Length: 454
Image (cartoon, rainbow, N blue to C red; front, top):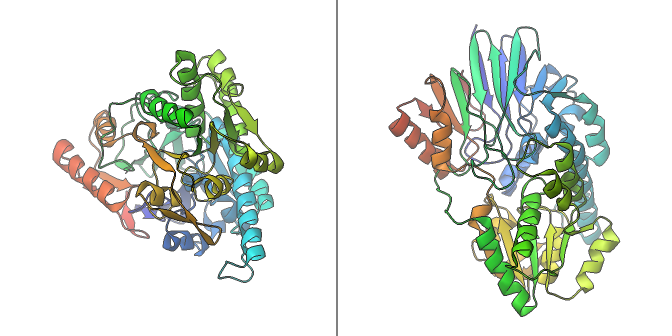
């Protein structure tokens, strides 16, 4: 009996990772992510899955970013009752990210209804904070390198992928087939996270391709960020930094602390972390020592080198402060959350700065800013953009094209098939060509909703 994979997300796009593996009448879902970015992608979140959630036996998560875990509350709400397996770090992060995601969706729906700019009457959240809280007991933490049985006859093993706390690659075994899901792979030289582990042997590989068509610059984040913040401080401006609450927020905090220690930027430049989710995430670095490069003292310093902003009133109070200062706020692609209010307030002034970190998916406000747009649609109105836009090329938490090829090359033997996923069309196809040319392996880019043998 064959083993098939249906690509329910992250096919020719970087969002919505969901891979349904089926053998006979049994199904395991690897990753359970939300679509983000373009509206036509976000609408897929409202489209029912091709299989009823109660017919899915188990879920295995590679990591906690919402494009890999954020559909879980809806899956549970619509009938999934199995276990969700993940590393301890991923479980702890999901406890923060998923309720926050539900809360933001409720807030955005309320805001849209109050100001009447939604085309839906009323605007409804995809799921609520309570829905997210209800799904959390389904998540079972498992250890890397140990083999577990999600269903009779099925096995999986987790391997460290770098990228963020708890991020893993997943080796799934069923009916004699070994399927390796890379998850999001970190960079070997990331200033925060350990490098990804070498991959195990597998028959089939699903490899991410976020930066499949790029090579990261040799510049380090300290050099890039230091120059930007020096300019900002000199002109007394305010930097708004959309950050991913998990990973990039902590990397930026660590980098700013190092720059202050080196004297590269003013020691008393005020820095605020305005994201309750990022505040709670930062505290996890001390709990998960060994998963990152920081010493105990450096992990402790993450929570003490910036001013943590938790309440809505504290966040609003930032609007009345004068520069120079730096505001780190989620979300990283400016798709929602408190950062939108900071952008609306500060983007119009020439002395200010917007610093983009990491990948900006097409269709997001972050991508619009990166493209040089002089206005931005926020909460139903157009906001003028006069602030300096800085894109940190060295801040990505994803491996580049060469590093992805190197990871594949480290496999003990060539797989029979490689599926290139989690990348825009050009990035995915560029990586596919490199795999075929440099490794001489079979590779293809699957279409959304397609089913292929493992």
